[in-house]
Image (cartoon, rainbow over all chains, first blue to last red; front, side):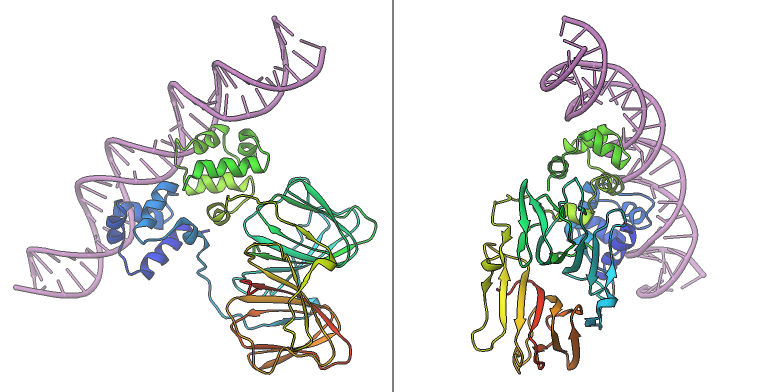
Length: 184
Length: 184
DNA sequence: CAACAGCGTTCAGTATTTACAACAGAACGA
DNA sequence: TCGTTCTGTTGTAAATACTGAACGCTGTTG
């Protein structure tokens, strides 16, 4: 993440000079200069102060997508899905909509072989997620509670709640899931 | 925005001590301590380094909603899904996560019997949607282009593009879909 | 051609943040 | 009780970020 370039792009988008922004933000122009040239890594408080002159929140600043638009591909054949498995564990996670620049949904076709596990340490991230089990059986733990999912069962919870998926059975499980916002 | 309290909450949620997190992140425990006590305002680079030990992105960190984890229903048996079919046509649409107060995702298990259709007039609403065909074949039209989906195929597009689903075949089609924001 | 006003950059000094190491308190077992 | 090991806090020295005042550059105006 290039903080400097990001700030400069936003500043110019707003039609502000370094000095103008500095004045509004209550910092010096040299601070802006050095941040934009990445010759310093600003403190949270000073970046916040700088952004207040735009104005813009830290969330906005970091989540702003400066990429281009227009993904045209709509349909993805089964073979076109890209595998985003973490390598280490054996869970297969295939992402739908690879051509989409900034997706709002991470829509996955996941396969949990017997014995697979998303890991001891609980996952916890922003957003919400839902899923539906197509084949096999799967064990889901959310906030300490453990559930058994069978074919056709589904789930929905806030991603911030610590969670974990595990397949302790001897048949593979196939799960279709959606997470928003997308973390891939 | 209380950066310190936020970091501490996340760290404890992950079950890490200051020293453990410090070790993973490649910083010292005192750094963590002072950040959490708000006796310093960390630089972007050091906060990023700290978060890498969790791991968590800056976006996630700042946008994380630390609100309550109200113990709502997590798992829904196949029989618990609620049918939100529009009555008129024969497409069956079953919603996952009915107990969820204000959902971000509309996650549906849809069945298109032979001859069914979402309607002549194109659907078009805000947001994005994705889906994966589990069984059968289905015809999808987006922005005038018509695609044939077969079992295992998927799609992803902006909901604002006019779209229509149709099953002109003589076997039912089963589709798992996700739309955000939720329109139900 | 000055003189000026704007731009962004750079340098030296000051203020802040970070690392390292020591510290006090709590929990556990010998 | 003592020793060990964990927890988080804190003092001091080194590293880094920030300020204020330069600088060189460009375009405009008299």
